[in-house]
Length: 229
Ligand code: ATP
Image (tube, rainbow, N blue to C red; front, side, top):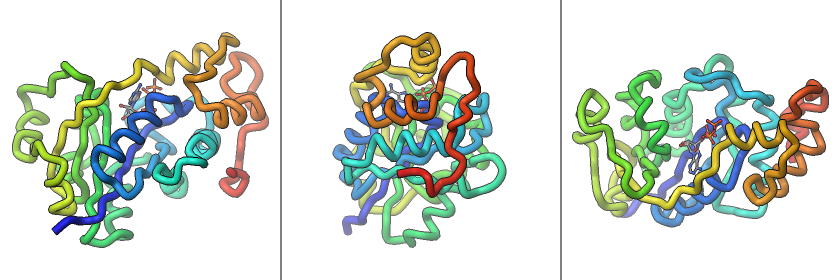
């Protein structure tokens, strides 16, 4: 049996950059995913709130992946109230796709080490597989509750992800690009170029709406999801 599979790549995307996009694309190919959903967190529960609105972050993402059919900007977390918990997103997606589709929640190693702070984290694999994008040489947590939980679910072959719809953990080694949104926000605020790190279409949105400037409020920030396209 080989199940259809969909990937989920969440983040703040403040702003989206080539590190996110290359990782999403490479994971989609390596895992044989029909599509990869990129889902901006509207109100991330575990970190400072992003510096620009969720609608602007979604618009930048939508513009960046517009010409890549395998990557889809998905605004579902903007349509829910309260903090954006991944477990709620997975439950919603599972209800939509039914039990005959594998879901693969893809996270970076930096996200994995904070896993035990996520709401109902042990239940994540009830709804999806967990795929961790790791740099060559990165070590998984080797002891503690996350390590024990991972060891019980760990698998080493992509093909196994297509044999059941949820429940496994795969570590996928990728050559991650050393780009960070934190650095890009600092560059944009200081007037330095971020070209070739932030996709041109997202940069056009940043310029058109005056985002990430150090002073002036971003009065042209998007207020309605219909305005995104
Ligand atoms: P910030 O600097 O604001 O924390 P970020 O780019 O590191 O931003 P997010 O936008 O929240 O972080 O990241 C979303 C997802 O992308 C996370 O799973 C994170 O591990 C991953 N990610 C972040 N930067 C990279 C990168 N350079 N290459 C691959 N994956 C990345």
